[in-house]
Amino acid sequence: MRTLYETESDTCKQECVRRIIEGAFNRLLLGPLKLSWRADYFGTKFNYRQERIITSLIEIKCRTHDIQTFETLIVSFDKIRRLHQISACFAAKDRVNGILKNLHPNVILVVAFGLGVYYTIANEDVCKSFEIKWGGRIDRDDSKDMEKLYHVPINVFKRIGTL
Image (cartoon, rainbow, N blue to C red):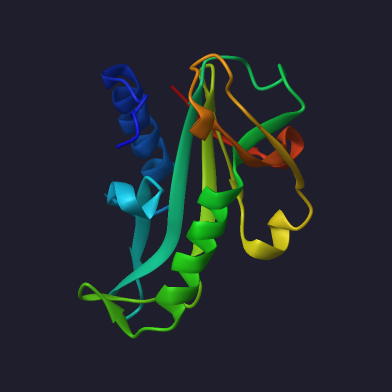
């Protein structure tokens, strides 16, 4: 089994970011996804009939550096592709675990840079404009950390809060 690098501190920071997301997007409730889904949360809202609708699949990244440090944020190509596949599956079903589906929930990438929290929509059509390169972390001596990566331009992120 692969080593998990997420620390208790990372989990705590992610929980703070979750609360910021819920506050920034009116009446959005986040629920955790299983590790096998390769994302952190799904977002739901109530529709006009008071039925819960899955509106988003959310991946949260916490970085210690400031947003202006790099021109792009790197994120796993396979992770985002998997979220697009899951989104398409939701669109193909009427209900998922008792929650009414939404046609193609948005894939949302949320990043905490330093103390700022930012987001961008990362649906398939948007991702086509992102550069794809091979790369990853080399400081862990973990060959699975090297993979195909999206380079998401920093200028597509919008600020939603502060930690």
